[in-house]
Length: 464
Image (cartoon, rainbow, N blue to C red; front, side):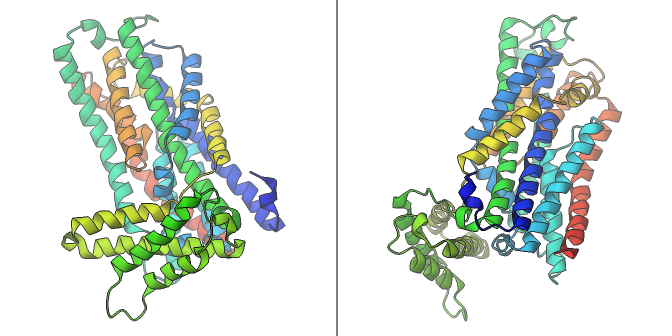
């Protein structure tokens, strides 16, 4: 981070910035050795790679994945919170909220790792966000449920719920199909002591380990990116509220998009035309500017707030009109929302680098606890070559689709479910005690982190 950007920060805000960023990077570090163990478990237990080379390779792939994954998942996490909370994130209450959710997520993550449970970092972070959102709404005097963007909560919740079920079913079906198409008994029996699989299968397992590691970096790394940007936007709005390196030609497109959204969602008879006010603000501030750097620092937050509200009005307009809305108008609003988002949804290269390093380094440390659980304790028999390859193919495909759709999913639960699916299809049986613990962690993570973050927010708000 350029040191010049820290000018004007109070000692208190600077201390909070350092603390909050340290916690985010620690979350990604813990996420590395917590979740990425899932990517290397199959190649280690099928003797396809030795543990140390596998872990180092996975760490490098996670590092690359952070850069390749874009930022759609990052801002899916951020937008779980309602627009009003996002535009007030630079208040003391906003700082308390960020600190509460980060501490809750990392505490649960570290605790489940210590107990060798393949719990989900995604669930932990999302649960913490939901907890502070709901608690913040109650503290503001609203009724229960006001403090969240429920449309986004439903999207994310559905992805978290369906992805493990999809992993279990797909992996089981693929194993049954492979038995018919490739009837080689060696593929469906436990590996001999230290004996690697055939070269072609070893290559497939290596590629799937690579793929799972990359998509894990793309999906889970973005969660850290989203949290870092939330902190930076709140503490350093003059530098991070808008993308100061926005393409100059896009300034005109932002103004045009704001005006068109206003025209499309305008409804006669409204006492207060909020979209008109926000689009007017955008035009007034940006007219004649060649880049966001020419916007006065004190006005950048004002523009960001207006753009977020316009995006919100467009989204609510589509929801309110439902199927009655012509498809052409729906597509036009979707395109305009992307133009507006381009000015506010971004991540500087140093943020990507810091998150990538944290995740990559975390991958190389502490991996053994979760690897043993995935490789030995989910099924009653040793993982076979076919089971390892199919579980990773399913995990890689499922998580990759989630990255493409901008939705956060759990690497842990997808791959663990895929392994369990192959065990069930292979009739080798699943270890009920281990599966019970994993399922319990899956069920408890959201409510536990919601409760923890909510209580922490109450405590922190007491002091601000």
